[in-house]
Amino acid sequence: MITGKINVVEGDITQLSVDSIVNAANTSLLGGGGVDGAIHRAAGPGLLAECRGLNGCETGDAKITQGYNLPADWVIHTVGPVWRDGNHGEDALLASCYYRSLELAEQNNIRSIAFPAISTGAYRFPPERAARIAVGTVKQVLEGNTTIDQVIFVCFSQPSYNYHRQAVEDTITNKG
Ligand code: ADP
Image (cartoon, rainbow, N blue to C red; front, top):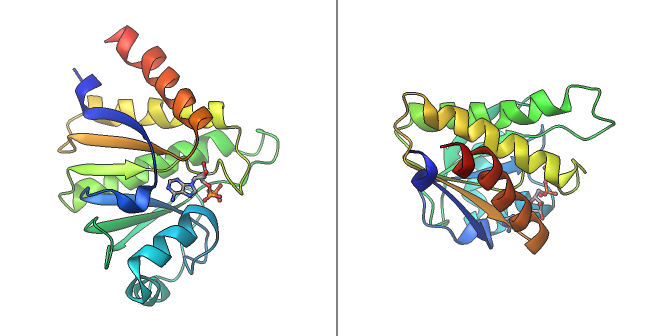
């Protein structure tokens, strides 16, 4: 059963004491608004300094840094797609963000990981569709042979929370 490994909460991801939080970054990895800005503010300047050495990140890919002043030990920076019309590979790129983040987590012996709703802010991905992709992708990974034992979806609004809860109910709870 993977139900016990997935949690949905409403809150600020910078406050979470997990092995790793995920940042919805941009391709420069040099900071931005939204959750990216909040993570850099909470982590302190060490994070930006390490990010400068990473040479950016492609859309759909992920890179890892330390967590500096955050309660989390690590930050996995992933770059979600900018929503255009749904016909430019947006779904697959978003799924890839979750896959690559979880792959990096496994490679670094991370057992607990918290995700924000990647691409659903400034990048305008429809939030219900994004929640279904997020939950579906995490489910696939957790069903495989993985060392990850806790995945938390950290939602920044009540609607986002509801979309994720519904997606968990539809894709996991009702189907085992
Ligand atoms: P993107 O550019 O990928 O759309 P944003 O940061 O603009 O990234 O938004 C991604 C999601 O993160 C949005 O749902 C936004 O409401 C949410 N968010 C913003 N700040 C935080 C935070 N401190 N903790 C968790 N989620 C956050």
